Length: 120
Image (cartoon, rainbow, N blue to C red; front, side, top):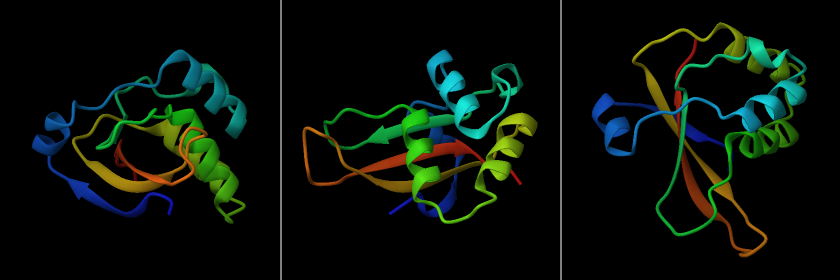
């Protein structure tokens, strides 16, 4: 379901898939509102890439994060995400996870791969 079985990946795999990108202004604003932090406190580092092997609208990261927050039972998830976005530092560690995504155009779920900068 949700970023199932995240695994660490090589730099080569990340480059092959287009590398990581920073959040765009829309994503930064929506994420700040979702987790209750100042927009300017969110890291501007390249930290995400969403890849689909199939042809479908790839959601932006704010849409995915909203899905994660709404479907995760952990009450402290917003605090964890706040720590991620505010204290992320450059590193070469990238993880990938799989997410099943449904669109209005297609009722069947599609698989997206989310590459993201790993944070401890």
